Image 1 (cartoon, one colour):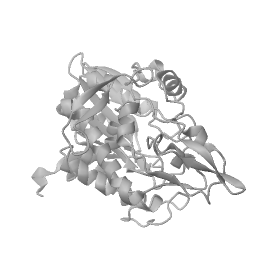
Image 2 (cartoon, one colour):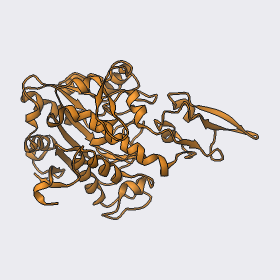
Image 3 (cartoon, rainbow, N blue to C red):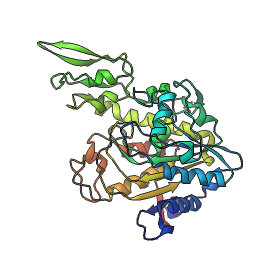
Image 4 (cartoon, rainbow, N blue to C red):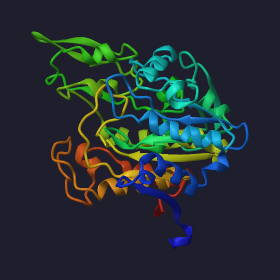
Length: 376
């Protein structure tokens, strides 16, 4: 593919020796270079889509950086609001009341960010709109009401690893983050099972299952967890909290369809406002897990920088490549692939398939994985 067909992705590294090289100044420079003022027409209700972090997590995007984006949107005439949708799993963001409380505990108040917070799918996930996409897995997807109704959107993503999706970036932020609980159910797999000989009967899977799909099963003189596949919605919370790793997914048959469904939902989140959605991704605190977990592990690689683009596929491709170009950190979840150029996400989660997410997203018209990295 020729350079003329490459999608521009703008990059600012983190080295700084003077005030004009601060991270805030770099956000301003990226916003200008990408031309994001174009989405912020006068009085446009502009969703600033981000992740407020689960309580116990501390690697979500700093509210100081979010304030910089809000100020830029307001200066361009927009009316920005911060937003995310409620979680499928039980946690501190399962409904709008808990979600708002968690956001404020993490520093996302009007005083700090200069914009109100609107939980996109309402009090308990019932606010959404059907959006036609006509794709392989879905003819129609469910998009959270405030996201669907917004005139434009800025998507702020903390780029990191993810056990099932390969990595969490702009595409996953759109897909899971812009859908209500019903939409999240449609995306997830239900192919979870328990290796009962490894189960220690700690009860964590049972306590964290939002569908009460886990129960005890007698195994001779001991008991072990068992998952009712008719009740399971495939949210993966049990997989996350199981310390002995007794719970697993059928990676060979379930992973690719899950990834394809994520890409299709991401498409649905922006299909009705493609020229009014901009993306900023932060390559810092690049942990092996999503910010949905109630902890923050050591990063896989050093902090890298901030990237901006109009294309979520190009942006995720550039982020993934920059991460893989780094030397992996020894004190991390990496089990292999520490050398520069090796796949860090497969080094952390051997079954993941981030390359399929990019390939399939490109095939359905979400964007292009061919990019031109422009340093500013």
